[in-house]
Length: 143
Image (cartoon, rainbow, N blue to C red; front, top):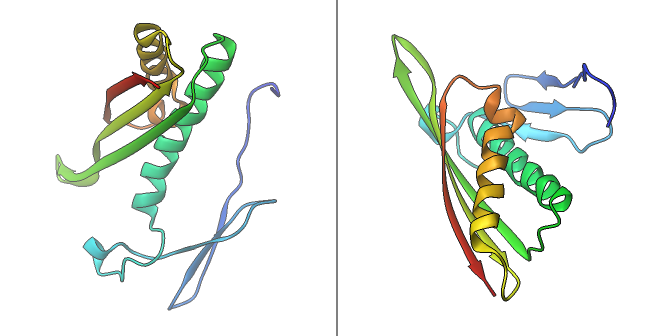
């Protein structure tokens, strides 16, 4: 890992019809408002990208923690639901709910896996950077 601080530069290019989000060395992403804000719903929106960032960060954090802890696992599926609401007169994300479904090999330590999932939720950089409550529901099973 590189020493802190890290800097992540992202840009957006827009015309009256389209927005493209770009970052170095990765594919560009087309962006548009979600259906809730009058968009067509057929492209990524900032709202979905924010929830995706939390879900992705949680999964990558768990993967790193599991590797460091030598926890064998087979698959992690995670769904996230961000709640956008009016709070004190401002529209913002007020909550994030994550549902993690982890599959362990036969005979895996379910309680230890649950603790590592909870640690991943507590240490997820993206979720920790947002002013909202994050909740995690774990479903751990062995194959």
